Amino acid sequence: MRRVGLAVMLVVMSAAPAAAAGPEGTLKRIKDTKTMTLGYRDSSWPFSFTGDDGKPAGYSVDLCLKIADAVQKDLALPELRLKWVRVSPANRIKAVVDGTIDIECGSTTASLSRQTLVDFTMATFLDGGSLLTTDASGIESVVDLGGKRVGIVPGTTTEGALREALRRYMITARMVAVQDHAEGLAALEKGEADAYASDRTILIGLARRGHRAAKFTLSSQLFSYEVYGFMLRRGDADFRLTANRALSRVFRSDDIVRIYEKWFGDLGRPTIALQLMYVISASPE
Image (cartoon, rainbow, N blue to C red; front, side, top):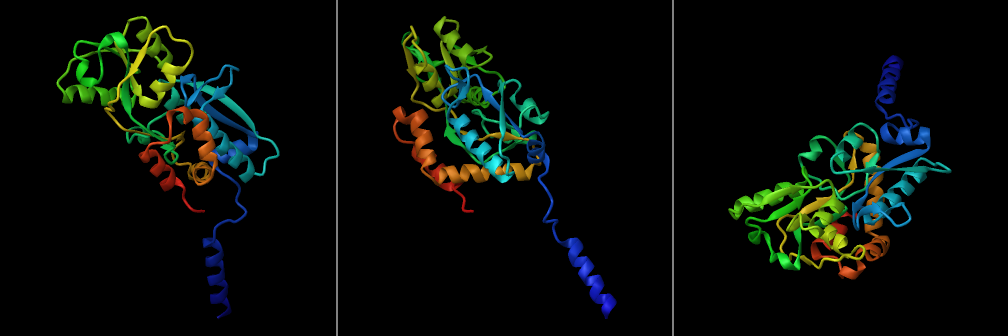
């Protein structure tokens, strides 16, 4: 009987989780180096861009700072160095996969195809594809793009959605490839493109940033719906949970009101869809 009791106790002990186990994956690397590496975009206004002071700024950057605060607290680090790395639409996924950055704080749509390569946090924003044009172009929506030149960043979900919309309406337009949003806006200003396609909120930020000689018109039509999230490496459940816990706390507090008003306040209240996203994402502890 004594041997049976001892055997049972050993089985139970071996099955029990190791309570003293330390962090693994990304969290372990952050704890060992006391450094968290974050990716940001150069011109994805107002989500992630280089501010006038040369530092990363934007809605997504502020949310990532909340995640960094949570990481520092969970790891009990007296100090946490934040290393910012600029990424582009062309290299952002690779930067996550190969470990160049720990998290991408941009305006990336959490598409299923991308989830074969990376993981995403919970949703951080809802947007939709639209068109920015000049007053002289006469373009009001996708149906007006016949024979027109449309600036687009290749490989984005916007490109796929726009091509599908053009196919659906049986319209032929010429795609003008640009590297990023700044180049797309420049093509529009120089007359090298008749329209620039991207997510609507980004287009608003582009049109309002700086003193522009051209007069811009924003299409009222959305040709797609985009759900943003922050990219992480696949299979890193602990880091993803830390990020989601931090975002959830922001979404169920006044912090999200302050962050939203800081970057989108002049656009009015959040859309009903975005408000619902905040409510749904405010998970309980």
